Image 1 (cartoon, rainbow, N blue to C red):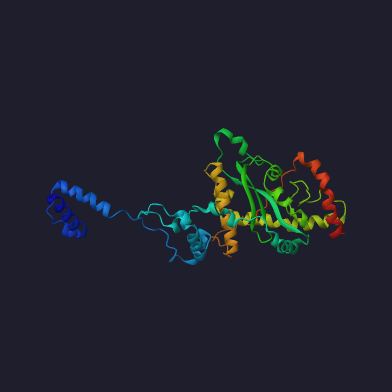
Image 2: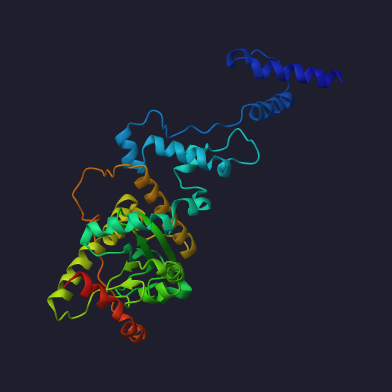
Length: 346
């Protein structure tokens, strides 16, 4: 007991003394080892924060992390319950540092990516009409490719028509470039029309058909009851005017892809291939889409480092040839498009 009390006294003295005072303490080698272990337990390592949100210059913060200080702090507050360790360890990484690494964001996907609300249809139609004067449009749909290093066993499945490996990502956007739907599950060799058929979009648009609203898609898709595509080989001036208005309106989805990839360069080809599994690449794409919407909602300006303009924001991807399996369905639904042309573009 006396020995234990002696050790406790020495330990307390050892932990509270300065380095100079420590040199004068007469300790046995065995006790010195025990005290060294105690000091390491008493003074756990503290990780130095490389990022200080309070002192970083505002412009540099947006250029580096794509968000302003207030938006990052909002994310910290929202995600903190998901990021904090259940064990209150003093060496844990603070939530603000984890947020900057996109941790736990996917748990909140339904808060940031919302397809369509019926009460917002009138506003959406008005916003799209202002772009190209096509009525009743509530979204533009298209696919874009995100480069990745493919799994060895299924390398060919990820090789797209331009002969590089990618994920083919389907997105629907609003007139303000807000992403309302994203499907990042399919490899690059899969056609846009196939992805559309196997996504939730047909079901969701079917629920809105009584409102007589449409999406806009390029000629890689078939013309459907809820999807308007351009007229191939227009023969009348009305069809030409429709195609011009269609292209002018649908350009918003290309601009959305460009802004998304410019803000998050890991998604752009110039950022190199993503060295992750396809599942993780899918998660990265969805997380970037969520943060893109957050930036729009918070009106965070898009700033990029000084340098030559590489045209990322204005990037336009070529149209995929239409899937031959869709030809018959397109013929059945052309009346829908013809009624729009006759009513609004004669």
